[in-house]
Image (cartoon, rainbow, N blue to C red; front, top):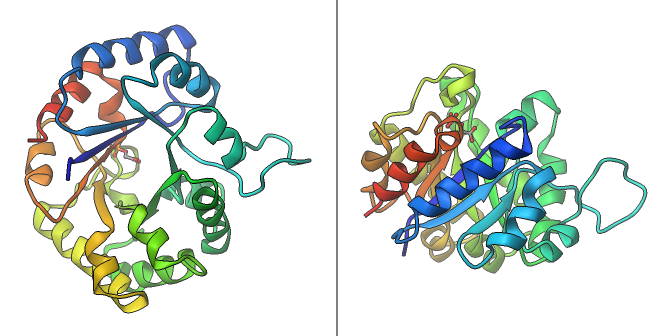
Length: 247
Ligand code: PGA
């Protein structure tokens, strides 16, 4: 299966013009990419970009609400994303958990709504402190996946991304060896919650300070299905090189 490279632009860049330049430069550079590329720009530009470039690349949202429509000021529904030609949705990013107090229960509702709308969730899990890894992963997966079928789990992407590894929250990049052991831990929890077949099928990617200096070392590992790139995805050339580092 092709590696998955997800660009999480977060709340960047600050103008439409810069965002337009960034997407067009990226598109030029990834024409013959061997990886599956998903760009997650801010909502303001998502529909515009996805309608203009749908045939060239895939798009994702950085968050979503769990209702289809209604009186929920400021929110965006999975149905709206679907009709805006979006394919992927990041759910449970550690910045949402930390700054917007998103708990596992809300994340579970979002995951279910995203799956219901036939979108692919990129479900982020990871500890805040190194010592709490296994307990936190177990809890985030058990509570986050409540009521979600094995078939649905097989279709989703799980990102292992501890908060301290994010470039703007410490940048303590997780070594390839530790990432592999975390991916295997995630798969063993999925195996306990579901079965071995589900654990083998679910794609687990790594996120946290991925740059051109380290991307190839994660991407060459068969157990790591791809990478989620934040800061480095805002530099078109670096992101293109990261995509090219997937062979
Ligand atoms: P980073 O962010 O690559 O800048 O560490 C990754 C993320 O938070 O998704």
